[in-house]
Image (tube, rainbow, N blue to C red; front, top):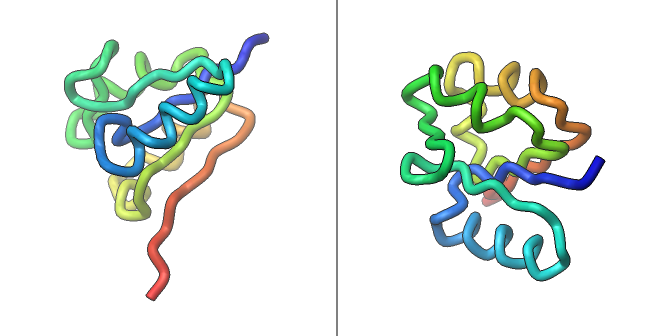
Length: 90
């Protein structure tokens, strides 16, 4: 199986950089955003399954994403082997 990383917030400041670095290393990247293909929107759980299907890893760009009801379960329900979360520490 080839790698495919779902990068939530992949059009934002941090997610865009993560996605570019992964792509530069030859890793498949799926941008998780409302304007992505397929679209991904935390406020619309019907968009989650298509975004995570086939992903081997998930990158969550900020911790509040996990507070969305069902977010953690959705990322685990994909075929993903790993996940990473960017967190801010004071």
